Length: 238
Image 1 (tube, rainbow, N blue to C red):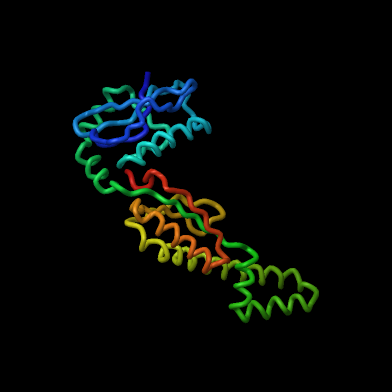
Image 2: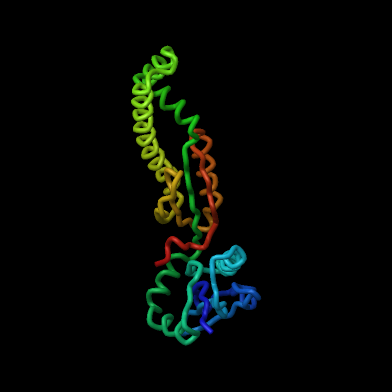
C-alpha cells in the first residue's frame, strides 16, 4: 500500500497528531515516519484518493493540529509516496533543505487575502473622479440613453479606467499589509479578483495583521476583501 504524506516536521516536534484520523474511508490513522532530525506525518493511502470534501478537511485538520504546536512543511492534498522507505529516503536526501525551511517558517502562519471591487461603488468612484466620463454619462442620459455606438464607447472607456483602478488597488493592498508580513506570495490568478495574495505572518503578529486588513476595508469601502487564515504556510514551501 502507498503512503500518503501530509507534511514534514522536526523529530523534536512537540505536538504530533499521531492517531489522528486522516484521509480515507474508513479514515486511516496518522503516524510519524522518522529519519534523523526529521519526520513525516503520514498514513496509509486509499486506493482511490480524490479531493473529496471529507478527505480535504481531514488533510487540513492534520496540518492545522500539527502547525499549532510547531513548524510544519505542509504538502498539498494528494501527496503520495510508494512506501514508508521511500519517504525516509527523501527525508535523508533533502534533510538540509527541509531543516532550513523549517527554521525559516518557525512560528509563522499564512494568510490568504483576496480583493474585488464592489461594482456599484467603483463605478460611482470612476464617475466622481473623471469629469470627461461623467459628461459622457450625462449626455447619454439626456439623449435617452444615447446611440448604440455612444453606449459602446462609454462602456469601453469605463472598463479601461476600472482596470487602472484594479491595478492601483492591488498595489494598495500590498502596501497596506506587507509591513506586517515577512514574505508575500502571489496566488494563482482567479476570475473576479483584482488581487489574490498570500502573506507569511509571525504568529505573534496575527492580530495586528487582522487589524490591518480591517483598516484597509474600512478606508476603502469600494473594496470587498476576503481573508482565509491562519493556515499552514502552503505558499511558502517548495
